[in-house]
Image 1 (cartoon, one colour):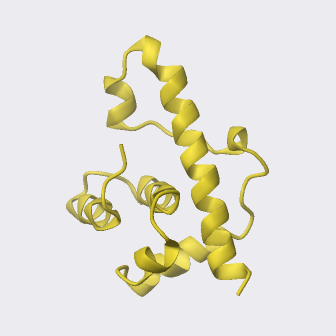
Image 2 (cartoon, rainbow, N blue to C red):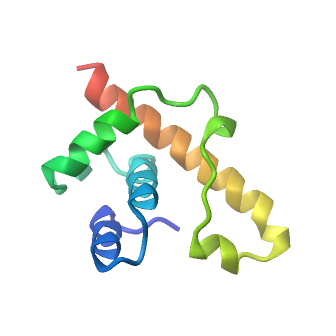
Image 3 (cartoon, rainbow, N blue to C red):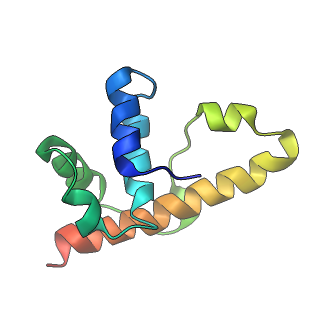
Length: 105
């Protein structure tokens, strides 16, 4: 489940998620929302973080770095494989969209 990118930023500012998770969630958000729309709503420091994050996007979804979130902890064992597959796909798709946004101007 993806939230609005600003919801993730608010969660980070409250201390609910880490900086690493925020970066990953902002990358994943671009899988469903145009990077231009997201960038227009983010502070400059996060736009620069996304530029850095997208310099070398993964060659395939399986190269996405794994992380643990409260969402995963709540997932049942039967759901975990599908959860990680979807997380990887979202990161892969979003990373490439950010890469094109920043690096193929």
